[in-house]
Image 1 (tube, rainbow, N blue to C red):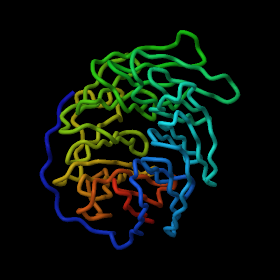
Image 2: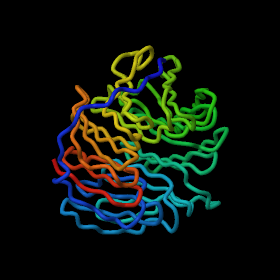
Image 3: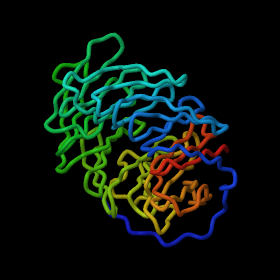
Image 4: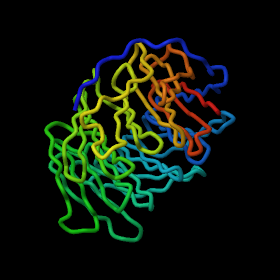
Length: 339
């Protein structure tokens, strides 16, 4: 795997900042998701704020403490908290308690499967609940850093120290360990189910080609990668962590092995969040100086959504139709853009 080098500055860009509806949430935001056409801004503690396309805000209490992890499929938003609870929030604003850790340990990671199954972790233990079946749990060698379901079949990826574990919860003895030294945090399957990629505590990604477990080192970042998003069709993985959006190619059977990533939208600030459009080859990128851009993947053309001069952008999301873009910074000031 080759390292990347910084790209030169880009030319001036057009602006849609006057079309953005400002949103003031009054709380620090850690992530944003769409439940149908309402944006659900997740606070650092206790609450989720719904914002509709008119900018009206409705706050819902979901946890009694910090909200540590989230996953959303567009129909429900599942969250884990430091109160030891796993809860789900639906588009009507109704909160359902899904699980409570018997020792009230923090719920560090959650994941959602397309068929409705969900997973969570507390300490070294990952647990899966699918339909009416009993909960299935697996202990891994160290604290779980991240969870992700495979796009096909009930298979869970568990990121942890020194690698990741793949596990079929309904099959005894099915856990498969994928080793790589270091602390692995976020984890994602490629949409075609051929690759697994983790974000690491160090400034790097690591990946495995699942057909033969061949390693893919993706390095060269000046900072940790805290956000990643698959492009429409899954041929590219957009990432934060540098002063450009880094997009690794996954369109061939070898993925990014031996290839350079694309580097788009360079600024004198670090990319803090990325969100690829669900239908078109466009992405939204937020930066450490508060800037938000929309970027066309084909040629890197940029549109300014929000100017700089505010805290780092903490969250970005498109709705399922790709008509609404929501964003917020670390102080809870954000906006909604309708395309």
